[in-house]
Length: 170
Image (cartoon, rainbow, N blue to C red; front, side):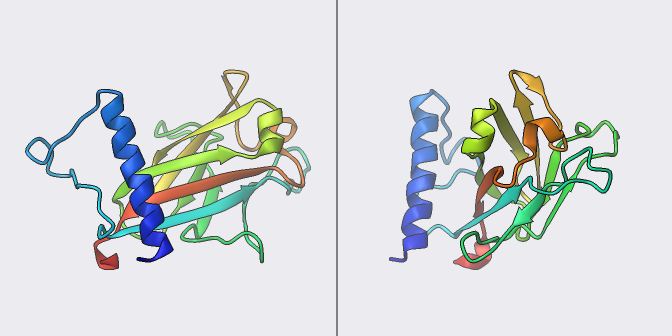
């Protein structure tokens, strides 16, 4: 059994176990989208690092980017942008990640590194199919990902992870 399949089964099993422990339940009879945990499930992992080490031409705001090198691989996150549209769909200053693959997400997570944690920044993720929206907060208040004082650093990272259901992976 491949390491990827073992990891995906463990993550998926943990998510289901946590849901059951908190009183959230689904059964095959109740939900057409419920799947039993199995090492044979067609799941794929995707993930990337977002770094906040570049400034806009004016130097007043941060330009988040995907960070990939010999130590940081980008798996399935080809495009990132900051929401600046004020169209009522999200919030100006959210980070939007576009992913390759399907729109079937099992779970998604966003994790701040020690630089951002020391600044009391935390973030949440929604979506997770072909795009995800990340919204961040500092001291309980929304903070745009372009905020120089909050995010700028040569080493500040957000770590992103998706577990997706990919029928073609079976």
